[in-house]
Structure formats: C-alpha cells, structure tokens
Image 1 (cartoon, rainbow, N blue to C red):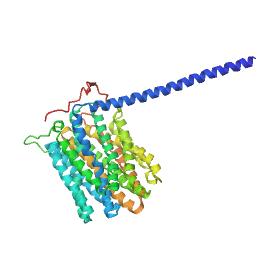
Image 2: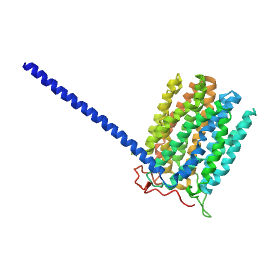
Image 3: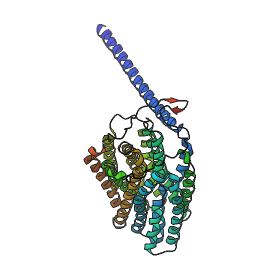
Image 4: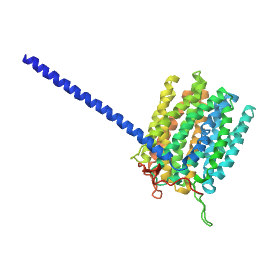
Length: 465
C-alpha cells in the first residue's frame, strides 16, 4: 500500500511537472507570436511613416512606371535577338552592349543632373531612348548586320533615364540627417526588386506569347511616358549644384576610394544578374518549358524583395561595411548550388533562397555611398553604382551566353558563383575604404518620431525650386 501511495505521489508530481512544462512551452510560443507580431507592426509603421512624407507619391508613382522597363530591356533584347539569330551568345553580346553603354554613360548623366537639374536630363534622354529601342527592333526583325544591332543596342543603353538614382538623390536631399533615410534606400531597393519580379515575367510573356518584339515595344513606351511624368515633378527635385565663377570644376565621386570599391562590388552583383538572366533562359529551354524563364527569374527577385522589405525596417547596430561583408558571403553561399540543379521543381526554392541576399547587399551599398559622398556628388555616385550593375550584367550575360551555347546552363550558373565569390573577396579586402568619411554626416538607423503622419526631423518634399 505504501509503495502504491508513493508511486501515486510520484505520478502526481510528474503530471504537475508536465503541466508546468506544457504551460511554459505554451507561454514561449505565445511570446514568440507576440514578438513576431510586434516586429511586423514596427516594419509596417516604419514604411508607412516614410510613405506619408509630404509629396512623396508625386514622384514615386511616375518613377515606378519609368523604372519597370529597366528590368525588361536586357531580357527583351536577349529574347528578340535569340529569336532572330538563333544564338544565345549573340543575344547575350548585344544585350551586353546596351548594358555597357548604360554603365559608362549613366554616371555622366548623373553629373549633368547634379549641375543642370533632373528634368533637363530626363526629357531628352527618354525621347532618345524611345527612338533607339525602336531602331533596334526594326534592325533585329529585318535581319540587319550585327554591327547595326550593336549600334542600336548601345544607343538604347546609353539613353536609359537614370530614374532610380534620381529618386534616391531626392530622398537623400530631403531626408538628410533623418533616421528614415536608410528606410528610404531600402524602399528603393525593394522597388527595384519589384521591377525585377514583374519586368522579366512581362518581357517573357510578351515575347513568347504575343510577338518577339512586344517586350521591347512595351519597354520603350513605359520608359518614355513614366520619365516624362517624373520630369514634371520639379518641386520635389534636389537643388542644382551651382558653381561660382572661378571655382574649380567639381571632382568626380570616383575620387573616393570607397566609391571605387563599391563600383567593383556592384559590377559583381550585376554579374550575378547577367549570368542568371541568360542561364535561367537556357535552363527553362533545356527543361522543355521556355515560357517559365521569366517566372524563374522573378523567383530570384521575389526572394530579394522579401528580404529587402524586412532588412530595411530593422534598426541595425552593426556598421554598414560589416553588414555588407555578411550579405555578400550569404550571396556567394546561395549561388553555390545553382550549377547542379536537376529540375525546375528544385530550382524554385533554391532560387528563392539565393535571392534573399541580393537586396540587403544593394541596400547596404547605397547606404554606404550616402555616408561616403558629399551632397553635391550623390546623384553621380548613385548612378555609378547602378551603372556598375549594368556593366556586370553585360559581362555576365556575354560570357554566360558563350558558355551556355557550348556547355549548357550549368556552366552559366558556375559563373554566377564566381561573380558572387569575387564580390565577397573585394569587400573583404577593402573594409577600410568603406568606413564613413569624417566629412560626411553618417546615417543613424533609429526609430523615427512621427507627428500627424510626418517624421518630425524630415524636411518636407514639397519645396519650390
């Protein structure tokens, strides 16, 4: 009997312990849910505070229309030229010619925008871009000589309006010293990724389902309309940099070592974009489902979009140059398995995971530029980074196109890993150059105080110029 009572007591104690443990687990799960909920609320609050900045939507809406075609141009050229020539190598090289022109001419338009104002550069550039893309379409469909394809592609890339850089310059001018500025850069990177989700899908659908030239036709139309509407928003543009008589010409933003290093790093990011763009197209064709190329490319951009939205809402304590090292390492790890993917079903989750490191790397790079470059050179500096992406895309699409023609999509994806790995090594060896300059006010990523829907320390955007 005593043994029975002792056993009962032990059983009762055990039950109580299990109940307590179960209660603790339940409380832990509830606490985790509350933490996730508070994090989501903070993220939404941070972005809503940014988007309630006075007059922001006056330039954001037309800028989105004008930036969407940026992700359509390269893939649109690849699809059209591949259709007319039958060669991925030729298609990649023609697309690369446009990207190289964008990379080298874009920063010069940024300098002109700093000096003469954004509208003075955007309007003629948009009109010339529409004419150049139209000429490229006609040349491709008419089976014109390759030199004419390359010439029109160069003109198409050289005349792309640098809307993304100009939007970032507007945020930088009007949110200077504001804790919302890193969030603004994150929002812009998320916007870029959104265009890379929608743009390739639209270009592929139009080229494969409507007409091989349809993607480029829509690209030219959206660029012209969106850019002209953006140029009309003069009241939100940053002030022009006016030099007094006798002042020495302003030096290029490239005089800063950190900017030069970031340009090289962003060339590597562009290399990831370019190699993936061509290799995914070849991968989908090898799988017998060429229409999925745009959707697969959008998966990469979708992962980047999700990560960018979360990353931009976090108040990071670690310095930006250290964060960039980590994000580049994650990008290299994410691209490592791409060359060996055997099927579309496996490619989708791997592509999503790979994309998670892209936007955080871009956001951190643009944040570093704001800490390294004085106000009078920021549009140019931002444009150097976007141009570097274009140059990397050109190199990546060219060489991956050659390898894909010879050895299949796996060889092209091997270049994706190489580009990410080189970028990581560049950032690793150049950490000293990425530390903020003492002459430039650094960004402090804190939570903003909002009064009546507007951040109290952010300058209003609706200013007369």
